[in-house]
Length: 318
Length: 292
Image (cartoon, rainbow over all chains, first blue to last red; front, side, top):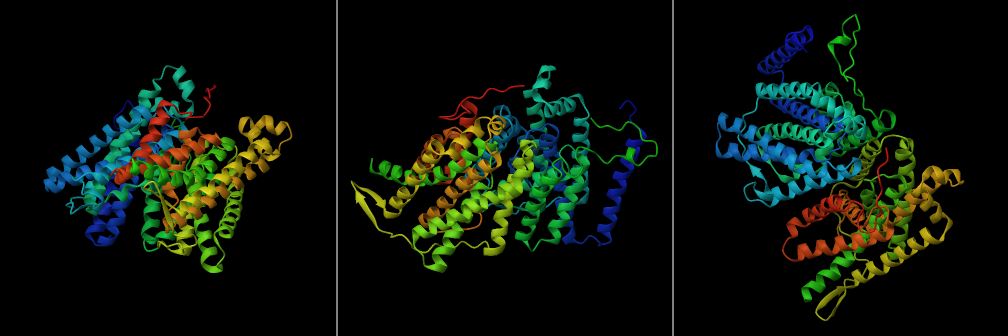
């Protein structure tokens, strides 16, 4: 980590630039049509949401069923701000405010609930997400149950690319910092971590807040892309959608979340007309993956460039 | 005062249904420490089974109830064998995710077959109602009580007076020790699922008749609320589930009766969070200490 431009960092940078240019060219050449741009948007939102949920559930081991709640905070904040101020500046303010408010909610919810463990925590986060949804439904500023209509559209591929890459890099750096190692220690054994002097509550709340922050960004992008928000969108099933991605990709694998996020967005597009079938496949995937490979497809492994090099170095991530 | 009494009467009939569902949660949690997310969907399938029986065979209310209960208990046992048993030694989060998966699977397989349309239950019970001191009591509410109360009494009998019940209690206290004493753990778990699911099936039929509408996603909310009821009463405790179910039913009716019908679900979840934070063991639960 001492050298800023190691070989891997350079390869990563080049790959990111290539992915950006490639997709941009495909869009300009109209190979990715407007219809598939929605898939592209879904892919990016999936990745942002799944990577941030993975930080909470996969790396810190705190099982959260309320990720859509934070997403809705980001979405509504950005929606309300951009409706009032439909400029690029307003959109940026909306994203930042949405993310900050979601992170604040994450702290407020996290401090009391993160004392709970495992399934109790899951239910408590679910309860909070439902409470957020019901509050949104009763407020006037959010349009109530009818929803918020006419959010101006600012998102396009450069925006999506920027925020997706930002999320992946920041979460990745967080995990490889001392904070991230503390989080992983908590996942492995909370009591042992506490005995080693890790302030478990602090790091759990921190992971929760960071996760909520990026969920807020994901929500803001969602608002601007789909221009119509209603409280029911961010219900329990939405949280499950992202949980499926994290579980499928592997709890504790960022690249796993990215791959699974892309895969499920494509599956979604292909099965767009068959909602019931799509959900049956989702559900069956969850059960089958859990029975045969409970650690997820990638486990906690990452796809790294070191894998591609001939001399295998010590490439343990944890 | 009359309105208060009215809300209490309505609350008790709704609450006894929650209690029936909560019993299944609490029994399964007590024995394998799993929040069986699919429990609410078994309740939904019970409602559809009852609907099918009443609509296509012209049998009355009680045969429909019993057929739904049998179908649900079979489904519960199969679910346990197929989805949960292979994960007996896996982490609790893995089992919980599986339970969520099973729940979604049931909802959308049902949706695939019966479509997402809301269906209305035929009138199998009389719609009559009578008034006592200004409080209106529907015949359906009486039927709910004469179905749920005997079922709960019967459950208490099974758990405390029979060999199966003894085995259940033993497994829930210490599975390994119970196995060493010659109790067939797998069989006992199957019995637990069978009984819990049968109660959920009965609840499904009752709700179908009481609210007169069913749909494939109807199980999510009552399932979650029944879970809240189980936590409120003390998870793992059977009388606790009954008390919790009744309380949630009455509270929910109070909130919506006094003008808060929009926020009644939020109130239920707020209760859950308060209980989890203040007294996670619930009203009748025992405190467990964490060991390294």
